[in-house]
Image 1 (cartoon, rainbow, N blue to C red):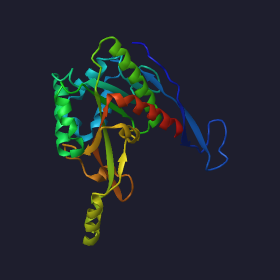
Image 2 (cartoon, rainbow, N blue to C red):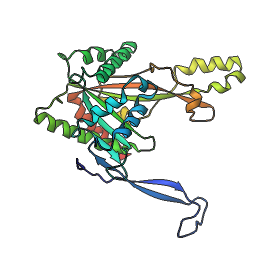
Image 3 (spheres, rainbow, N blue to C red):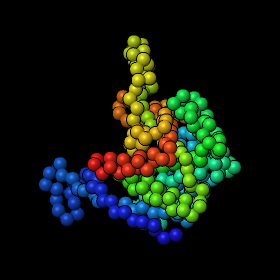
Image 4 (tube, one colour):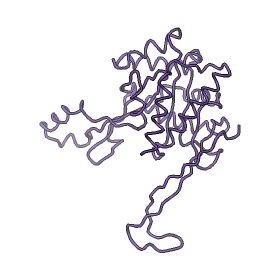
Length: 291
């Protein structure tokens, strides 16, 4: 299918520059600015399968092995008029980011969605803040739930996100006019966060008193967002919260952010009622236009 819409978004990136091809650097502090043009596309079944699988694996982190990511990618690509991908070198390249919505009730008989529903319910039961999700995702008489999946490579700026949400709103509106099953009452956004934690590599050399001090502060460690837009979306949420991954993760040392610290990722879910979703998207646009 042809490209739906192209939005030009050139972002300056600093790169180290010792000497350009045409002129010598006059200072060690000189940098060049690299302009990157992002393009928004409809999902492309013939081009995006592997790229979507990679991004889904990143989104679900260690729990990705619990899901049939191929089936999930196929389901996303089966609705090419809904959702977006972001690319930088044309339609036939792998996506650097994506956003889509899946109807949980409409696809509940598909094994991969049944697994996702079971996963959401299990996580909702271990975090009281998410308890409302348990009943919503299993009871189609009470709610029609759209599952929003979105992820991007780590070096892709957050500014690519608001246009994808804006286009999703438009596409859902068009789909409803065509009597397609996207008249949702609620949206669940699957995401992820992390906390900085002490590295286990140094524990053997750490005095016991310091170990106890670190342990006492562990529960109060600051929460960081892989997706900064989640902080905006949460202002419009009925509930939101984090959860530990079901699969035991590798040690924090494999994901160090600083010399003495590692990071511990965890899952995160946000529930937004459909009548508040448009306002949330509007605030996203305003927030990132000012940043």
